[in-house]
View 1: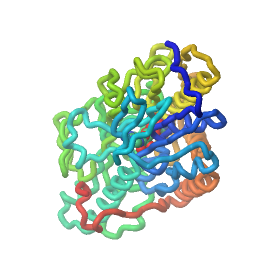
View 2: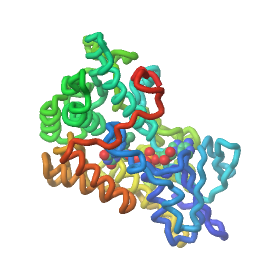
View 3: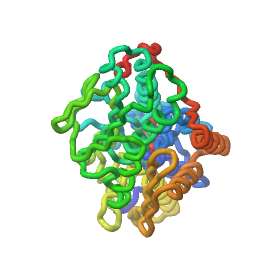
View 4: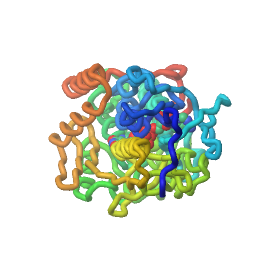
Length: 431
Ligand SMILES: Cc1cc2nc3c(=O)[nH]c(=O)nc-3n(C[C@H](O)[C@H](O)[C@H](O)COP(=O)(O)OP(=O)(O)OC[C@H]3O[C@@H](n4cnc5c(N)ncnc54)[C@H](O)[C@@H]3O)c2cc1C
């Protein structure tokens, strides 16, 4: 498909979403003759891969999030707007914002990501929060810490057991990382701080509908991850889909587990990008883009990252991970630059998979680079160095490295704050 002609004035690029894809597109457009408007519903870029560390009191919120405005302070051609996109008028080429404003564009990049989904059971959300935003992470942190506080006060042993039972639904990387870290929190960090309860008796149950943990990884790494989790005391339940979540239990198979804290780490649903531009979508709401990442019939609109579905050159779906969103952001920026140079040929996106990494507790990780698979302590070091490298700014890198050193050497997690609740008597499953 031929690209649209560019206007004679400076080309206006509107990017919606300051996540991994949108941010990378804006960065890659540096030096191009374009004016960029970057719109996000929140004022910060969030490093989602470490959200579980906020949820488990290991890192502070400011260590995994950065104000978008500050990231682009040296780029006068980038305008940042704190607003929520509510629609796209593709005919008039403008986006509509929640406050009623409309922003015109010559090229639009939709990079609005995804949220967790409950397989049609949104009524479970209040009882089993998912992990996607800072608010989700602090909600989960509050519930975990409040459960221990309430167990310390509780005299009914059955209720105390339910308070000290943590169920995680979904054994993908997020579920595995959460389960391992909650087990270590209970086993290593909290015991000296409580007087009546033995936090080491806490149960952490990881429930997965599939037949192995980390289903996207090679089987031997999945088996290793399961053994490592069990070594930390995590109970791994496989081949059981959750059929009910309530305020005090989770039901799977023929079992009903009394648990006051249930965390949802299964299923995602794309943003409404496909609806905004009336484009086809898959079952998870992901917009089906053309090979060059444009929206069908709209070569001036690109969509990237978790909100789209596209196959790699081998025909496999491009995974919903940060490197894929970043590569797509770079691809789109380079397409815009080549169009501005007058090149009209369409450029197909070719995703290159660099590897998959997951941490299991504070000493172990698994890594699948394709040509080599790693596990154990060496994999953990590579995992740690890679994550510190991808953080933004020296201060954050140093701060995260020091925090991890403290966790490793002293078992101390500095962010054990119960915030936004009404105090220790809060019901851990009611906000
Ligand atoms: C808990 C968790 C752990 C993860 N771990 C890993 C990992 O270890 N490794 C890895 O590679 N990937 C990981 N991922 C996946 C990775 O974070 C995503 O693939 C990546 O963030 C996708 O980038 P994106 O730009 O498409 O969307 P996002 O990074 O989600 O950014 C979307 C942006 O759009 C904004 N937005 C959404 N709707 C609107 C709207 N209507 N108006 C304005 N703004 C809007 C949002 O505020 C957000 O800033 C993890 C994800 C989660 C949730």
